[in-house]
Image (tube, rainbow, N blue to C red; front, side, top):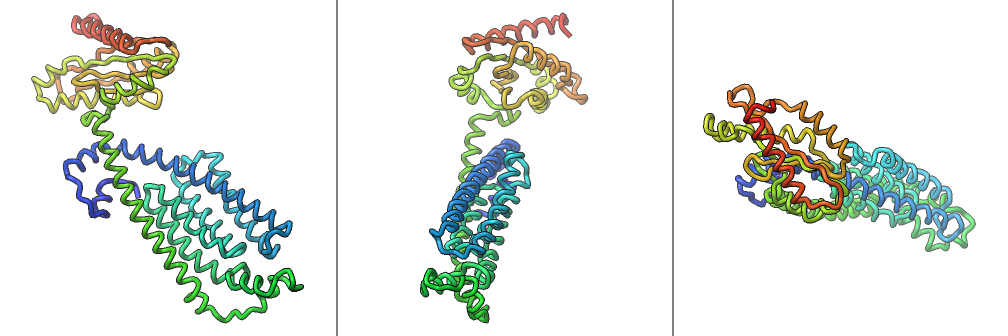
Length: 398
């Protein structure tokens, strides 16, 4: 599921005011970015858990090889070999891709599920509890298809492990047989006992072993899915509230509130800062001539031009009206100058072809290294912008 409010409105009984929904649609790009960040984080957490399971399985294997456990060595080796292959594939791929590929979450869930089924079938009947792991990890992802993949894969994995495990693995009955008759006191192997057992009880296996486990697993999964859906709805609401507080609804840029929060925290720790103060020329004339809709168009065009530069280390804000600011974090002066020069050369007309009023940007730039007072740096940039604006009006700067 690519999380969006339309889906949530259809799938949950909670009613959300339609005006809030419209604001959410406007800010969908920001929510998608948050979803992407959460997905990358979920991939990392899931891979770490898979690596932990890998280490535990290795310890169990070694313990069985030296005689601490009593699982048949041949089955243990086959089961561990299959499990290690299944666990190694996503771990290796994650080490190369950092989990930033869209398909990685599906691959991760499939191989984690295969690991669970392998352990259930070949190693120990206690492994049936592992089938919940893929479902729990899949619940981290916004896309509901990941959860469904984990559910159906492991549901039929339970059926597979019960039937196949009865014949070739460490099924419950086989383990009960072995422990009841004293495995260490018998000369024959577990494999020999399994081959001697009655294998005509397919219906009983499904009815009395597979079906109860599948029902319990489905009940747990259903509970998890509803809990996760509720949490995701709360997450979207909180994201909406945060974005309404920190983002400008017209331009989708961060607002003065977000700027002030960074000034008092993040920006004070920077080694260097470059502040770019921007103001739109002729915006009032545009509003007076064509109306505020035309003025809003110009403001949005200004934001589009700024977004060509905005990234993790370059922040863009609409402080109010036609005043905009960009903050370049920890750039060397020559780097910032080169970047801004190239950006200025790429600027396109803000007013568009349909409006005769020529709107342009007056830009003031100030660079400072630590220690600096950001308010003073901002004021210098504002003053330079104002001087540029006066010069442009006097046609001294084109």
